[in-house]
Length: 371
Image (cartoon, rainbow, N blue to C red; front, side, top):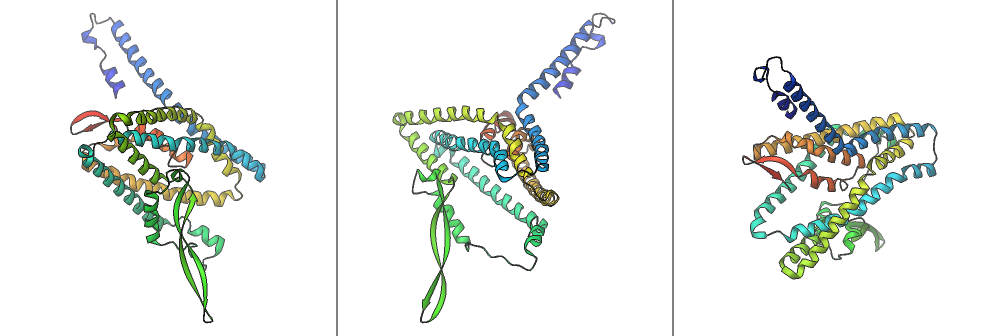
């Protein structure tokens, strides 16, 4: 649009000093072309990493198919997947301090009286969006059944399956509360709480019976809920201490900036990591036709569910803000590429903070939207 406006702003023939004087028109045309070329060059420069990541996806696919013809053994496959695994480990290394430091810094500046309503609206939006996402995924899976044919081929259609740990709905909500309110600050970074049931056989008066014993175990995984809760509490408390908490907050501000620099350095290796992450599993395929058919059905199910959820969210955005939601979609393209290629919800966290800063129109005034 800006390029067309630039071309439309060229002087007309009637506005020239002489009807045969085309010097001004030629200079204006040259300025318009130069402006368009500069904008294209700026766009390519800002999105070179995204373009390289897309190319790495196709290169990894072709490289994996080529390696598959050589029939590599297990040890070779481990080394093929090694660069991708190292890339994911490096990103996970920076996620924990980055999220914790930013939550502490942001929560220290919040005022409950001023931001109470905004916090409640944000919390309601997060809960409702997650509920809608879960409902959309369940509906699409029940309609398409992407894994049903694979189970029938492997185990037969007459077999039944029972849950291993006798998971109950009450246990799921109990685990949610246990993880939200942890009892060990260091353990938040190491493990999550999970309820499990053990079958105990009891013999009495010549009769045997089986009882379920409920135990709470710790599994090795990052407790993100507990991390955010602890960071929020420490940040809010530091903000209320005044000058004494300033040193504490300055430390975490420095931590956030340092970790951000390190993550930006690691993200430069995204194309290499993505290439080997895709090449390794493809090289390990034994039945490519069956695997790709199941993968295509699974990908179609996920894509349909995401499109359904995206349509609902865009409709809600349009009804609430009375604005065009499609203006914000180009800013999300980079996050989508990183999330799809790395297959992890934590890696795009850094880019989402930059993507959320986009020009939008709120209540009739154009300003920067930063969330």
